[in-house]
Amino acid sequence: MEEINILLLGESGIGKSTFINAFANYLKFPSLDEAKSGDLEILIPFRVKVGINDNITVGEKDQNESLIEGDSSTLGCRVYRFCIGDKVIRLIDTPGIGDTRGVKQDKINLENILAYINQFQYINGICMLFKSNQTRLKDEFKYCVKALVSQLHKSVKDNIIFCFTHTKGSNFKPGNTLELLKKLIKNDLKVELKTNDNTIYCFDNKSLSFIVQHKKDMTFDKFTEISVVFSWEKSVNESQRLLKYLMSLTPCNMRDSGSLYNARVMVSNLAILIVLIAQNIIEEFEKVKHIKKIFTEFLICNTLAAFDDVYLKCLQSIKDDKVTRQNNLEKHARTQNNIFSKYKNNCEKFDNESEKIQQDIDFLEKEINEHEEQVKNIKEYIQTSQEIFPDKIFILKDDYTTYQLTDRRLKQ
Image 1: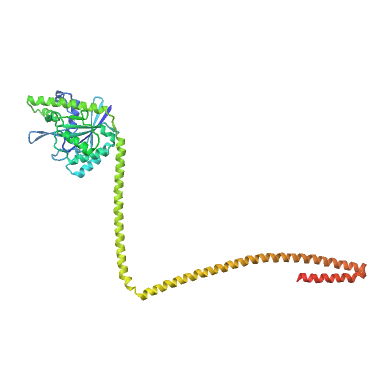
Image 2: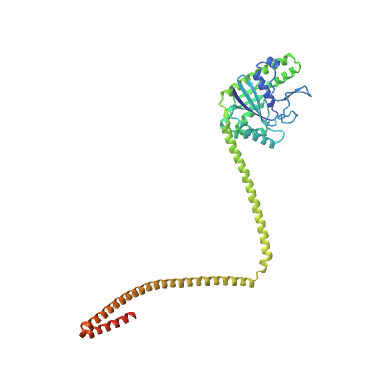
């Protein structure tokens, strides 16, 4: 079944609850006679005035609706659903703008409306309800409508329509209210909203009250019945025309408006956090200032009073002595570094000299070994020669003596 979602907005006391019941019955019963003989579609409990002090209450008691005179009737957002043929009509009722509970409640209601409609996938139309021939629009109504339109996606403007009630006295025309509406659009909403035959619809819901009284066996004169028949037929035609127009429009995708709404909520929450952080910073800054003040007073009372010239000179002397000690330590450290550098260089030189000495020692040991070998050979040669050549013994002894001297010098 095709579903049609319609959001209703209007000032408190404008008659939204009565309009919802009447609209459902206009679509259900094409003629007044059918409505008189059939079972009325009562979606919301409402009250019909009979005479000066008597009232007729219709429908079952609903916690969302207040029937106390002077109170705002609708207390929260709610959907009223009924079927017409193969179509499901959902009328989204909202608390009246200009709530009797005050401006603060209006703001709460506005936030609730935005949050509530974001749960729908789409909305076919936004219906703003007015009374015909109003002399002024409440400032609260202007503010809330402006706030609501500004927080919905820009595509919503093509799906806004205007319904006027109590139009029988103005020949089913908006009357003076139309000019107020145009000023509201131009000066406050500042969006291009169409005000033509496709967007303006006029009703007179007193015909529903007539049927309620008729079912209570109350009688009316012929002139009244003729007037009510005309009102019913006119309202039926307007209801059918309204439904046909909304079905021709592209539904508003509430995901677009939902994203915008969620972004605004996040920004609003961040703004609150920023304010809280700023307040905490200010509080902490004040605490620091207070502590600084106490500390300053303490110094004045306990320190500065004792600062005479002698004490200052003593402090300066201690400071100078500290600087001198520091300089001496740095100088001593530099001296130690120099000594260490020299020692390191000497060690490197000593290592080089030791290596050379070791090389000389190795060379001398080699020479000594060679001389010892030669001495040994000479001894053997002398001994052999003494036996063979006695006349050359003296010469060889002289050579031997020479080698011995050389050998001693090498060992030394």
